[in-house]
Picture 1: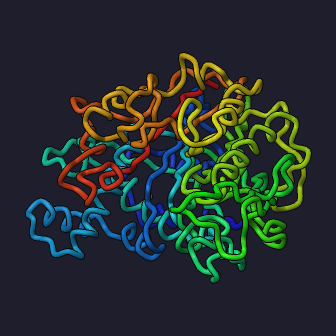
Picture 2: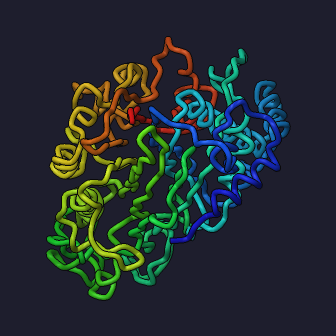
Length: 476
């Protein structure tokens, strides 16, 4: 694992740059503790997962956007309102709009711990500039609860995260093999995980509680072939004129060469077990955050490669928590799954809906029904839901081909599916949950849809994200 920075180093540099611009003292409290003061006792904790859709065409662009000062952002937004922007400025201004709205959503729901998916990095998780800029220039700045394109301003309280971990990723990591059999080795198709550069679609973790960095386990290099029951995908779509079989291949052939299959990672990005330490009245409580972002089970051509990989990436966590993961090894060579007494939360954009969609439905169902999982928080009364989800089909926010679903309150993306999950262990007392998706009549809906922004008619990926922030509240 590549550690982004120590939490203390990040916090100190942030505080020096930030000054006193926040009313939230968690940032300084947890990174510069007073040795003579007892740690704050925490009774409740909100844990969130959010696919931010910061999937820029290169990492440099994201750094530049995150490095803009508030004054520079304000100047761009003013010109956006005045309609006096040139094309390049308009593109940048709308990126600022998106980032500000994402920050406002985070400030609105105020998770103490947050997995941020599709937050690009340098691939090896060493460059902290984008993460630092997001904290200093957006999260630490009061955003508009009505949305950054609202002319009426109602400010939110800034939010600080004193502990940050960035994680290496397989996306955009060139494999060295012609994985798609087109006669060349090039990005993005021949990366171990789809990406136009190494680091696209990566994820990171921010927390107001210490992250036990010495106990983090990553599984970036765990091989797909080493999961029981998994085999090299075969060419099974054999008569499709749209997707002809590549030259030199035939129906029923293995898709990957023997050499490529021997090295193919199971994780399209990374799988990470990161423990956080929460001080409670009964002592420190350790909660393992089990994070991943499996490949979507779509875009297949002559094989079911993506569908099979999505299944494997989800089944990995089922085995990891069930006591059936003796075959698992992490990037440091340690074997096995999680201790059967450990508390955990599986979280992320799993690209899998338990009732619909293109993936293997039984795999995500099995995970949600696992005996170690809190059933009430996955498909019971405490399962995350929203009021805006059921409305999204009628106002053209969501794909119409999923409009007949009878569980739209639970959906988490404009696909109209429940793709983003927070799955806690059965020992955790979940007292509440939600999906941030305001209706058209509710405050904040402008952060979901604004026809003035972007090239998709105001689609939510332009104004914030095509996914929604999902969270659970846990009483300790």
